[in-house]
Image 1 (cartoon, rainbow, N blue to C red):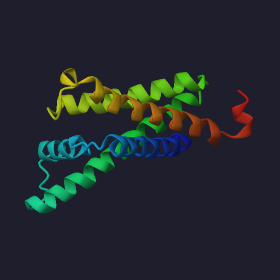
Image 2 (cartoon, rainbow, N blue to C red):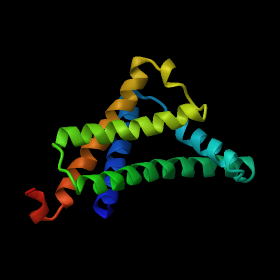
Image 3 (cartoon, rainbow, N blue to C red):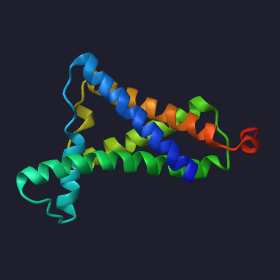
Image 4 (tube, one colour):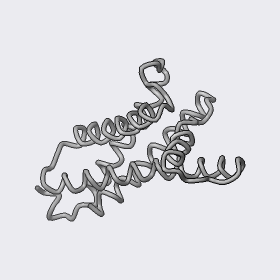
Amino acid sequence: MVDGAIAGAVGTAALNVVSYLDMVVRARPASSAPDETAGRLASAAHVDLGPEQQATNRRSGLGALLGYATGIAAGAAFGFLAARRRLPLPLAAGLLGSGVMATTDGSIAALGVSNPRTWRRSDWVSDIVPHLAYGMATAATLRRLRSPSRRGR
């Protein structure tokens, strides 16, 4: 699980890099979904984030931390499962990427932050490509972190 958590952190960094590159190439703004999700979760938990300027900054930080928590937790869970069964790299990458994407998109839909059913094709591409990068980086890192005796299985 520890190797999986490390791999999940690497995957989350890859997801962020791909997202930032997309912002640079297409000159698109950063998504407000992480900040809004953090705000809705804080509100649901009755957590006061302070006066508006402080709350805005805290939502921004919490949104990023929630992304890392999701990526690390998914990597840890996959690491636990991968210890029992070795999957081909493309399959593992697809499962990881789609699993994290479903978790993230499901939570923003459930919290009313966004409705994926209304997204345009470009919105889906902006979501799918970084999550595939997450899956590939996480799966490849986990495979690399395995000890040589376990890699041969």
